[in-house]
Length: 343
Image (cartoon, rainbow, N blue to C red; front, side, top):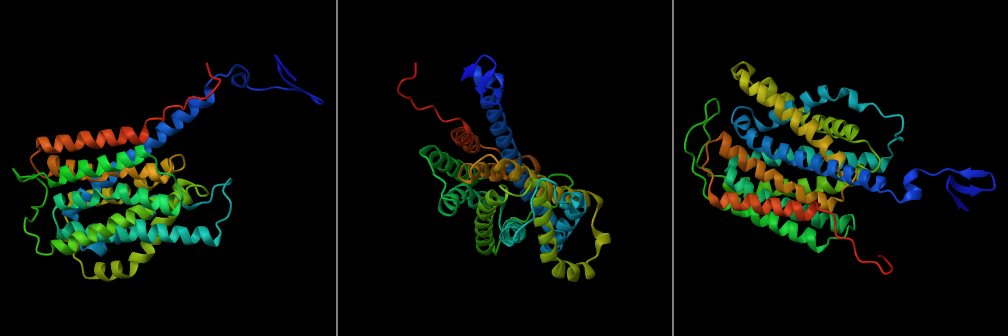
């Protein structure tokens, strides 16, 4: 029996929170706040990815790609030593979880870095934006196929607008107007552009797999520990080639500003991005989270405009507007269906 003080049971009154009796929307507010926080985490994660994709271009002109990857994983491993410890509330990792952690690291961390770094060194930032615009569609399709997540018309529309917006952005002609002080000159001729574009498409598939596998992992492992473990796997995978290249490389020739950029790249790519992404995936489905990858090429193009002196055109402004609409479609709450008997 329900009374003013709760539910009357044979053992006495069972007191309920005030919102359970008065139909107060407190849990809904909390849930909406959690979703908003998850959306912000996903958006910031992909913005950071797009930033370090663009900023890695001068780094690959100075450091060999495999040495750069090894240094990245090594710096991040030092920064995340404390994250390796198992939280008290987390259970032991079984064989399946270890396998998913390895795949998450191999595909979404190690192979994405190799494909992306080699790709941007062989082709233009403009071409990279065109190819990376396929990430939202690839992530949604993988989430639909492997996780059996439903894809509603809004997600499909968001994916379509994201791809259209980034394609417009990338296909718009960008003209370098001036050399940016402190940054290495970017070559304008790319004789191996085809191979670079293929590698970037491989990075698209790796990033989509990263989204899907991360959704599975985020259900059982904390975001910080996922970030630390997959980075450690990446460091182990890159160590043989990294040690060989480090033995023959002249580190004294690298200027201080490039070391600072390397530290930012390592922390952004291995620490901040993974933790933010896994935090968002604990709340948001992979098919919906994949739309946030639209911010990756957007951020890359923005760095190209602001950092490398490329001209911003009206077509690029339209592309940004389409990307914003796609994010609104993917993140705004669905309208409530009318239920019979409601006032």
